[in-house]
Length: 109
Image (cartoon, rainbow, N blue to C red; front, side, top):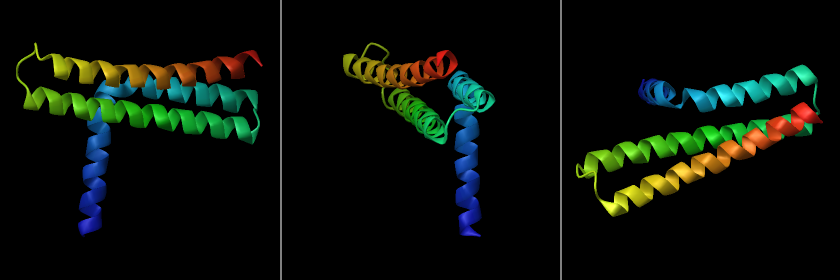
């Protein structure tokens, strides 16, 4: 019964993140759908899956740490918290750009 509770907590966390991170999930699904529609090779599909999963995990970590920062520091003017949030947002941007570039590559090629 313990494993069921752990799975349920994981699903709840994913659904909570999905309320905020749905644009990234839509990008991932769009690139995946285009790749399937175009009939790309298995290697390219694996690249899309790995980059899409990386983007999803990066956004989930970003969301979790931002919520933690907001909980720990109620002061919105803390420079350290602002730097942490900016770095995390940059990581999500890089992961999104990587997936977008691969998506464009699949569409154009």
